[in-house]
Image (cartoon, rainbow over all chains, first blue to last red):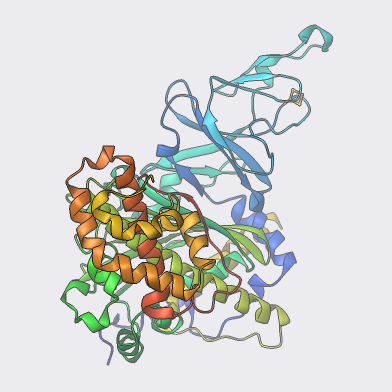
Length: 419
Length: 110
Ligand code: FES
Ligand SMILES: [Fe+2]
């Protein structure tokens, strides 16, 4: 008997019949050729999250970002009118990378009044307009008004900055995000500014890590050694079931039920969890954040643990009931490598106990994520050997099934439209 | 001799030079480079003092902690950092993560 009711069709997967229930192939994660198709069909077409507005506090604040999956390198800046804009980070003179510090291969950030090219000193204002050419008289009729920085489509939703590399995006950002995601509007992302940020390079296809955080079926098994034995044994015995799954266009959501650690026996907990009153699910003292938007915990789960909103293609916003949130982002660098960025955001601590509880939650999060990421390399190696290529996904893995289907659909749509 | 910690926490002073570290990067890598005995010693000494330390620190202005108080806070963070191997894993690294690493590039201060 399922612990939570399933949809009338009998399963979450069958509730969305376009997904099918057949075994799946992971060829989309092991082929250099498919990755090239994915870059064109997905990463050069979808709206991609690149940062938060808090990274651009003032006029002239900027950050750069290399997005290899779109063969792009951009600079995102707050212009004189206070708008967030994005440009290709390339000088119009002879193509030098415009904004960088020390190592041009690394992303950088800062504040400036204008951008000056390090090579021959051409200057651009914060709106991207070309303002100055060194020894302009030596050139042959360069009309400065025609050679501003090349713009990239850029828009902001709920403080998250997105860019789109299509010549003309097929949808506005709002249309792309759709009703399930935009119903999160009103969540106080702007107040949760205490950030723990981590990054790492993973030797696996980006979708395998999306999959790892799209299902919690693995949690009681892969993470068993994180907890006292008694807790792990009980968790493995119970298995994992989510009370709610939801798909909306290319995006997906899972809600989980809450755990009241503070009511548990001490032998189920780690001593440091009891002392700091914190752990994997966050501080036991819930941060009071006011009224929550209707899009959060849309099925009204009680007790509710978290909502993981997985935005196509490569961005996840995971909101915990205890008043904090996590983001995950997966940036492909090849068919079998990607850069992973994970951040935990809390309301800025106002006292020691809050801060210590945040530290405990952040350290715990990292230790779990280390186990997740190490496993991916083991999976990637074996998938690439290609002796076995049919794999079974259960109903708790519906979101993995959906991600791979959406990628396939986007590739087919794009290639179909060009034929 | 100069001390790093407030006088009330003189009992933890022997651990201060090694473990009063301001960044997660330093704390994590010190953990990986330490033996279980070294981490057990810190844990055994500091764990019973965590609540005392929080009570002590709570009396000070959180946004303007004096240097010795900040050191004490960093020692608390290190105690959290070593609690994972000491309480459950019996090894410095979380099991089955031989080739994985995460770089912490931003964290709240203090
Ligand atoms: S390449 Fe930028 S000024 Fe020459
Ligand atoms: Fe996990």
